[in-house]
Amino acid sequence: MTIDWAVSGWGRPGSALAVGSGRQGLGLLARWCRSTGISTVLAPAFCCTTMITPFWLEGMSVRFVAVDERLVMDADSLRTARAGHDGPVAVLVARTGGSGPSPRLRAELAATRRDGGLVIDDATHAILADTASGARPSWCDASLASLRKLLPVADGALVHVRDGIGLESDLAVPGQNPPGEVLALRGDLPVLARGEPQRPFPSGAGRYLDALARAEAHFDESLSPTAPSTVTRRVLGDLDGDALARRTAQNAHVLAGALSGSGARMINPGVPGPLLLRTTRAPAIDAELAAHGIFSPMDWTRPGAVDAALWPGDVLALDTRPIAGLDDAAMHDWLRFTAEIIRKWD
Figure: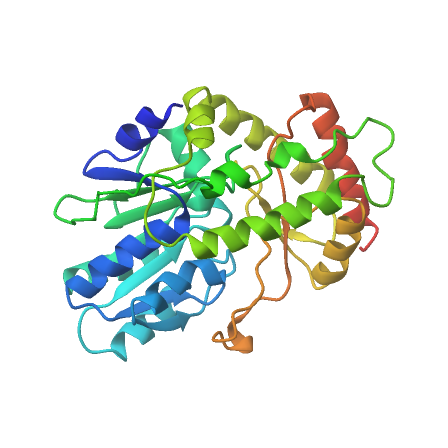
């Protein structure tokens, strides 16, 4: 997968734009909403703050909609939310864990579009699945995917829009220190030799977490659209997206197999993305995994604006991305070790 392929192939039909971050891409879509008179966005109650901040910054009202058992927006709740609002709205659908909207939700989204609303697909967790299938969703007006969650890059996002939606396309030239130039990639984590994943805190993990914190601060400061960094463009130019999708899906399959029969309920086994579990012991398991240097790819703290009753507190997200420096056999050993820790809590 090259950046040229990503912009043209991922974006057909319509147009696509590569920007520096998911925040920037959502900001462009929020501006489009405002320019067309849409002032309210209906967002999933299970979300990260990054997904909703760009709409707040544009002065839009954000209303939260309950999610279903797969952590995707619930169809009945969306219908109720739409009924309580006059005029067109934007609906932000997150394909959390790579799961798509249910048939009933698709029907509600179609009704939203018929009423003049805009449906936005947050495809961050689904970009590898889209790469493998070559398909683009037809149920939305725009798709946004942050690249750094599943691809081995430190910045970048793709925005796809249907014909007729105009986005600002003049991107600022990356500054002296664009986000992608100063962040640590996941490969900076130490390569863990087989047979010793039990050490309580791998050397380098603290530096990795510090780098992630600095990364978030840089992205918070970089809201104006820019092009992806030089580093990201170079990595994408050499990246085999199909192979990455296959390896990630295989990792997810191995991890799901190792967890089969455990007390945790798997939401999306086999999807080339983070494996999501639902277990009442999620916070404690997450803490123990972190003590072994196994960090969740979804650090989602409930935004203060989201009602606690709508927030699923039993979600555990497990990373299935290949780690630089580990061959598949070593990676699978590491995933089975992860499963052993989780199964202790049954």
